[in-house]
Image 1: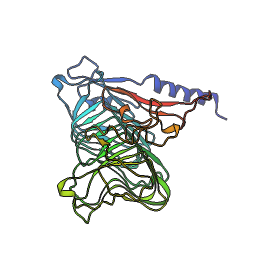
Image 2 (image 1 turned 90 degrees about the vertical axis):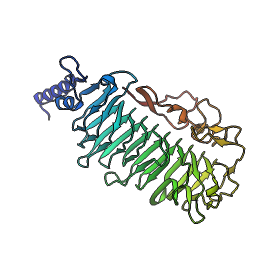
Image 3 (image 1 turned 45 degrees about the vertical axis):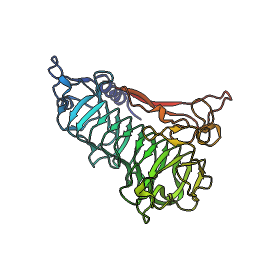
Image 4 (image 1 turned 180 degrees about the vertical axis):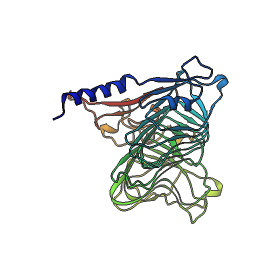
Length: 399
């Protein structure tokens, strides 16, 4: 039996840890009690503190490499204004450590993790990286939400990637193999990106992404590549808009989806970009094992029969806006998704195929503005009007 004294001591420690969590203010030439650098504020902090950062005078960056070795939250002091950093942000792994970074603008440098410790929770939200990458290995569970990567990639093993804009051609979201959790699932939802690559044995949900590659510069390119081999359905590709060029040589293959495991492919739009140099290309569009399922998919700018998807619809009336991923109507994909109620659009009309259809419409996430956002709502799949209690869980961030 736990003694009364031990219980009270433990309760006191819990309460004091919560009560004495502090806002550490970083402000150039600020008043007494503030810090001139982010690193100084980290040194003075304890687990649970929040570091509130004022943009520097003249919009200059904090020039420092930042090493985070505590459970901290980093936020901007001014609503809707990011604080600039010139340098790398490195997060040290430790059991149950939680680090949240909101509203950083990296003029140069990466956001990344080290390799030791289990299990560190990391949130990267509302940040802007001019040239760096976001990279975390299998010691981290990472939520990467509403960030802009102007010329960088995202790589992780566990977590979720939601509503990010990877601006430049040939930018990727990569899910690396993990030794930490053998049976895990990930959500890759409503991102703008060139390619999604997975080498892990996770169950991968790819919903409402605008996946676009404009030019064919290398052969054997897959817009979505899932290379782990399994007889189970591990890949779910729903409501995406995928643009992929025809192969530049007759012996190469540019696939929309390449998977070594069974896949469900539904409610998608596929557009083939054809340029004079690529007209000789090979038009094999998928590389899939037996046992996949494909329904309510639409294809533009091709008359080639796509015999791997059993219910394909070739629609040369509609097209795709290559800047936004939106459908240029009229198009058969309008109200053309799976007719079940759970796939309806947000206005409760029959669902559109493509990245703007269904509940995870790209409209929910773009443009990326402000310093606060509800980015995830977890509800039962297929809400009805029977009057039964409804359990809803929402996740978001606020500067």
